[in-house]
Length: 243
Image (tube, rainbow, N blue to C red; front, side):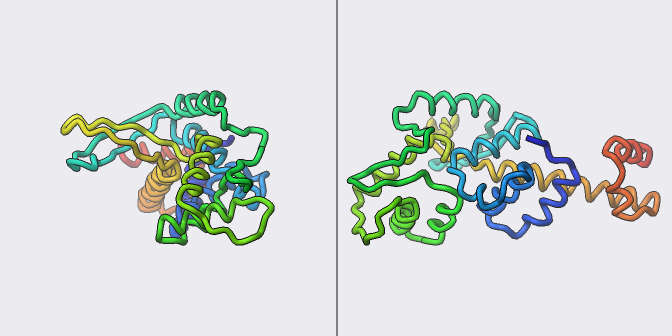
């Protein structure tokens, strides 16, 4: 997987600025994997999407992921960091050990109904619902294979479908455990890998625009001329201006 350059980040930031996070994830994958059609990427199971985005984060911005969360009990701010590649290895091991993991694409069967793993396209349909139960129904119906008859979904069935999907695709939602040093509250939260990636892209894009501003003010060059410079040459010119 090819790392994003500063120029790549600038273009992606501009194109993805007003997109929904799900669409941003697809935008970034499509840029990193240009040989794969966007339609195919949208059909990838969420775990495959998340693993690829984590790999992209590691090659483009480094394997160290740093963030901040608030304790849901006392609102204390907690900083955390983790190794992205170690995270990938841990979840790969979990997938290998899980008896539910269906790497061969075998369907999930609940009460005689077959389901495939959810994709970005399926999740995009589910998030349109504001009610959690209706969102779960929308996801189940989107992933149901074969039968087209209308079903009255019970809470028990929806819960079982969710559990089986999570077991079959452990990286569809990466959960992290936290322990508040202030009040000792323990909880889990989801790792939003798209948000991590987007933060890196936005930061690098804004830094590049600041570099363009500095060099344009110093030398009178156009943005196109400055962006055509290689990164080492651009940094050297910046060092001379700042000296």
